[in-house]
Length: 211
Image 1 (cartoon, rainbow, N blue to C red):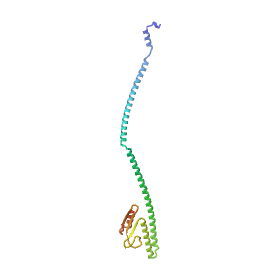
Image 2: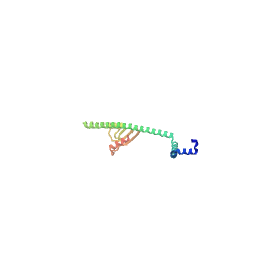
Image 3: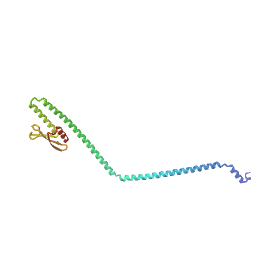
Image 4: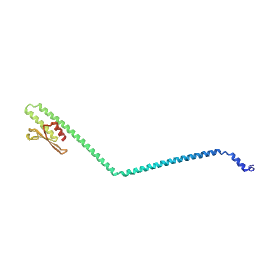
C-alpha cells in the first residue's frame, strides 16, 4: 500500500511527524556557548600575552641591573677589603689586650705604692713617738728620708740635693733641688728642678704624669 501512495505525500507526512524545534533550540544554545567560550578564551589569551610581555620587560631590566652590578663588582677588591678588615680587627684586639695588661700592671703598681705609703706612714709615726733623744729623732727622720728615696728610685725617680748637701742618697744635709725621672718603658729621661713655691701635690702629679 505504501508504494501505491505518492512519494511526495509520504515525504510530507514524514516531515510532519518529526519535531525538530527542540533540536534547533539546543543547537542554538550550543552555538551560543561556543561563542561565549571563544570570547573568554580570547580574553584570557590577551591577558596572558600582556603578563608575558610585562614579565619579559622585568626580566630584561633585572638582567641589565645584574650585568651592571657584575661589571662593577671586583672579586679581588672584595678579598682585599676583607683582608684589610681582618687585619684591623686583629690590631684592635691586640691593642685591647695590651691595654688590659697595662691596666693590670698599673693596678698592681698602685697597690704596691699604697702598701709602701702605709709603711712610710707607720715609719713616721714610730719615729715620732719612740724618740727619746735628739739623736734618736734625727736617726728616725733620716731613715724615713732614705725609705722615701728608695720608693722613688723603685719608680725610676732620682731625687738630688743641692751642691751644699753632697749626694743623692739623702744621707747628708741640704735641700732637694732636682729630680731625674726615667721612664724605661718609653725610654724617656726628664730632669725637673724643684722649686719650693710649688706644692708637693703639684710635683707628685707631675711625676705621675711623666711616668
